[in-house]
Amino acid sequence: MLHFDRLTTDHNVRSDIAETFEREWKSLRRPGSHFSSHEKIQVCERARRTRAGDSTEDGLADVTRRVVDTIAARPATIRKPWVEDVTANLPMPGYVESVSLVSRIAAIDAFHDVLGIARPELPDAGPGNPTGEFNPVAAPSKAYVPMTRGASIWWALTLVPEAYARMEDLHCVLYLSPEQMQQPGSPRALTRPQMEVLASRTSFLNECFY
Image (cartoon, rainbow, N blue to C red; front, side, top):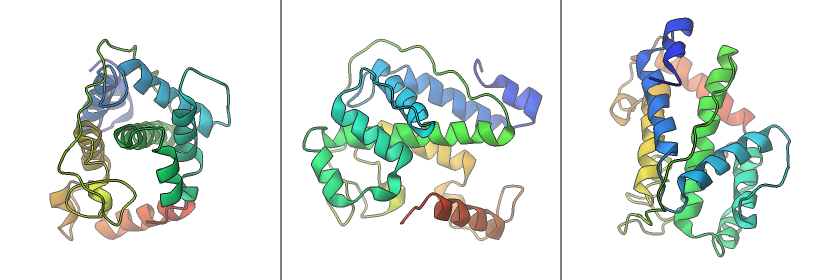
C-alpha cells in the first residue's frame, strides 16, 4: 500500500480498511462512466472545499458544481424535482457517479478526521476517456434515480456498476457486508445495537431523511 500503509502501522487500523482505501485511490486514477479521472478528482476536491465553506471557482461544469455542492453540503434539501432539474443537463449516470464520489470521499475524510490525522492527498489523474458504461437493466421506480432490484438505498447506485462497486467496497469494511447485515450479531468490536445507535445518530445529525 502506498497511501494508507501508515494507518495500519501507526494507528492500529484494520488492514482491510487500509487496503480498501488504497483501492479507492487507484480507482480515482481510472476514468469513470461519465467523468474522466481528472474530472473525478476535481469532483472530490470540490466536495472537500464545499464542506469547508470554500466556494472558489474551478474547472467543473456549472451543473456538476451545483450537484457536488448540494450533495456535499446540503443533502437534506435534495428532492425528486431537483434531481429531475439537474439531470436535464447532467446525464443520469453522471449524477449517480457524482453521488458515489462525494459520498466516498466524505467517508474516507471523516475516518481520518475521527482519528485526528491529516486527510490523504488526492492522487494524480490517470489517462483515458469516460467509459459510458451503465446498467441497461436499471429502471425508474419510486426512487429518484433508475436502479436495479427496487427502491432500496443499497441499490441506489446500481445504474453505474463501478460507482456501486466502489461504494459497496467501502460499506463492507466501514459498516457491514450484505450478508453480515442479515445477522443479529456483529463481527466488529461494537455490538450490533451499538453500531445501529451510532448510525442512527449520525443520520439524524446529517439530516438524512432515509
